[in-house]
Length: 210
Image (cartoon, rainbow, N blue to C red; front, side, top):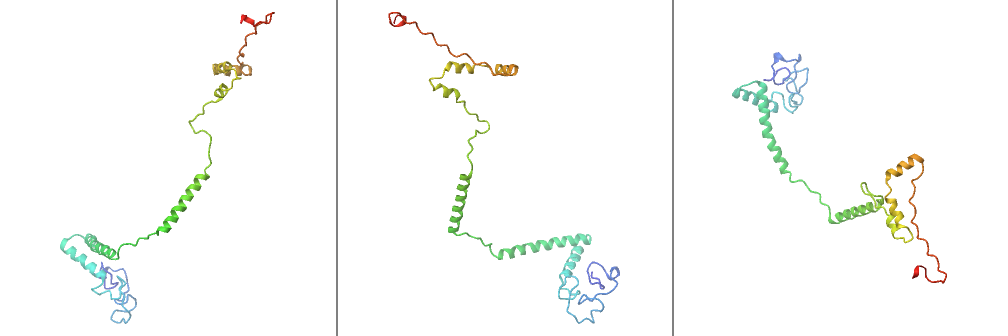
């Protein structure tokens, strides 16, 4: 159904919202189609043909909707949706076929020499990054270094080992309690006592009868 006032589809002249007739040939106001000598312009598809042409895409679509409704029934909206779906099924394979005819996409290939240069630059950057990283001699989290105090003193023959071993046996609670009470450091163990020398004999012989 085409309106003879605005020349659009879907309603008649009696239900048209326009008050002035449009030209069926050029889609302009102020004159009729019989008097028009301008170039053709369709109001529906903007093509170079009059709105009354049966080759207009809009006209062919509306004709298919009316034919579908006449055979299958239903409302105009349902018939319109069914026709649009059928048209989409027909158009989609054609679009894919045109895309395939265009040929495969071109692949950009990099010459071997350029790839070698890129790899050499990448390796140089990685080596420079490794050299620029500062070395941290601090122990990692969770790692503790072994105390070297007693090992270092054990190799020195001048150090009294028994006094050092006695320091290990002093409990920590005793040290903390002593410091809190008097504010002084805990007492150190007495050094090892040396045996007294043997008295010399009057005749000058070796003491002890040796």
